[in-house]
Length: 309
Image 1 (cartoon, rainbow, N blue to C red):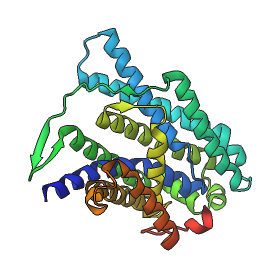
Image 2: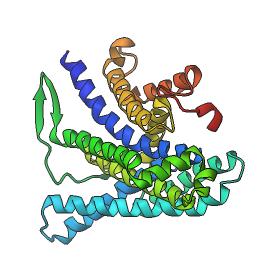
Image 3: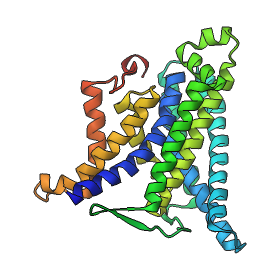
């Protein structure tokens, strides 16, 4: 029972991050019908920028409190990712809005590879240790263990997701985003600046991705130029599972995928008689993706995936 509870807690932490990244995919898809495969690399850039700032401030020995150092690193990561995502949309995607759908899709893959290579040139091929400025304190819950860092990850993700829902449902910007997603031509005729709304969507998604990248790196204490690839694919799987284009679906899909992956990793050894170990946990994410695409391409909360992909 304690193993099951431990995997549930691990799955909720993992799923919270998946949901945060998945929102970046689903927001862009909801407005443009574009699968932005470069989003995972934006998440990676956020982690690497935060790592650079943390190491830089540590080397400068300015004696700032850890909370201030973390806030500075997070702010730098968010700013860089927002600027990067704005530039990607402006340079790579906007000229292709009226092109056949295959063109922006291939461009997104190309941007993803380009960002990976740029990151490799800047930060190298090696894995980097992500510094822990605040030592994690473990807490025991019915035999399972969770650290205050993991609790913080879930709280931060929940607050950001709640804030996004308020933004989309209660603000003028959110109304413009929903109108653009519904019918950009009509929204434009009603006075909505379509280009500005699409740019804002990319920028908001990138800010959440930057936070997710920092949280992932902090949780595993490691950062790498290719960390965004698998994370991005899993978040995309979460978005498809929940129903891509649907904000609630992305959140639900992220949490479910995290639980499926974590519980599967905990029991895969018993299920296969020891043939497969927990390091095969990635298999579950892609089994989920294949299963959803085959049996329910609209996802659990249904958007028109088959028509718009």
